Length: 290
Image 1 (cartoon, rainbow, N blue to C red):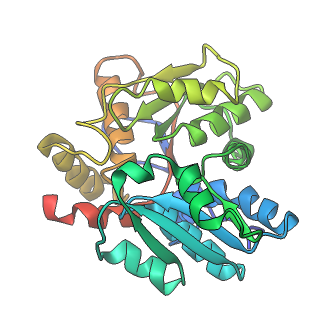
Image 2 (image 1 turned 180 degrees about the vertical axis):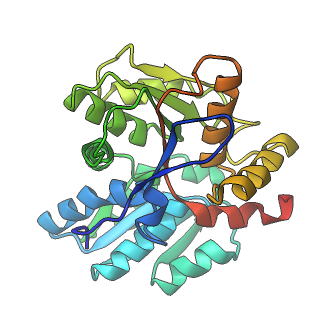
């Protein structure tokens, strides 16, 4: 299942940049999209090695991770279950999960905070069940994300940018940068308020480095929050570049890139790589805002 990958590097024609590129992980797969594919890769290998046949995970009602897990389980002959945060709802994302055979368990927000307890209460005696953290965060996921750097045919970028929710992808990127002895600066854009904790998560897996830079002012109100300014940016960006981005992650990253250039913190002639982490189905959760 994970033997083939299509994730080219495309030049992004965006004023005033001369050398802005995107690593198109959004093209890997329509449902096991972007960094979700990379996070699940080694978890599925682990499941097979441990003879686990049932993937149990967690997410919100518009979680790309749930869609990816459901699709991956279906394609590999595994069962899947997801604990959904909040009241029972029906939407496009959960409809796709159901079609892939995922069992959906809606959970009140207080109970959802203790995910290991939820798993143990329902699946402690199920030897076939495998716990997968929300978003797929794990040491295995970091190994998968580190391969982004290994795939670069031209690794000489001045800057690499990625959006961050848990820090897993960023930790993998930093691991890959160090492994390949690159001088590239890694810019991390937390998509939620008070995102400095993400740096602590990254440092659990990869030692600190002067190459790691955090920009915490581009959350636009918090996780899955937007503003009219961000929505206008998304519409203009897609129209001008032909590259689809989502309001939760990639739009905030590209906005940060353009704003940092305006501040002269990065230069328009420098070679910049933006990691397009996919997850475009999540835009359906905000279609009414546009």
